[in-house]
Length: 303
Image 1 (tube, rainbow, N blue to C red):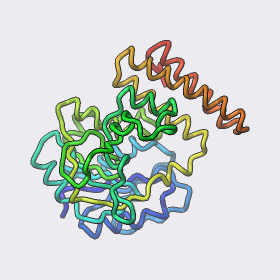
Image 2 (image 1 turned 135 degrees about the vertical axis):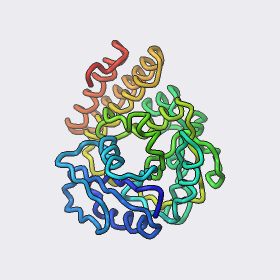
Image 3 (image 1 turned 30 degrees about the vertical axis):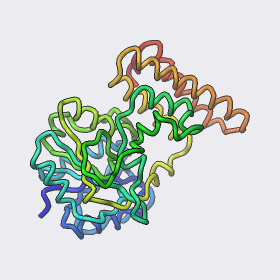
């Protein structure tokens, strides 16, 4: 029996869930599924523990539910659209041998190529976030700030310490999860909760190791793509600003929030010319208000 239990958080992911579970069972990894009030008629595979939420509690809260629902010392976060191609024992060995250490495998495309730019990133710096919200990365994706943030130079076929693995294939120790107070449920409903967890683990002197011997095929983005554009805008900027307030100093958090204001203002103007609907423009305006609050007050108040 595996030393780890896989926790899969699903929201309208029924089309992929069976393959994810089957891949875990193939390698002897027990599974806990936390369903965040799916409405797609998801059918849950046999042989797994299923927790059904009556409302979408968000990714972080669902992860915490899943960890509490099993007794193994290790938890594997696995996306419902990720399918294990190998066993996870090398990840388990790393975490068992080293306290305050988490481990990640490599996410790959259907042809086996690593998903560079997503599988592993560095923790976001103020410059990296500023380039993102100002649209510089969209206009000039090969800029040095973006390349460093997305680890363009890393050889993902080598074992190495990393900063921010994707939460789609991430193994951590229960005792570390307990010491950190779990995933921060204020990142609601999605985005930046896994980045925040990695940051807090590293800040406490922990480590995260990439083990390329463990791989999973990852489709990517299917749940998020089902969200209305207006919700994606509100959720992403809200979580980004929460991360900034938690982990940056008073000056840098205001600086990044100011960049958010500039980028959103430009997107609003562009949206008007492109005749984007009111829901999208309204979401931009709501996010502008949140960023302005961060600039003026240096926090998000009760948001």
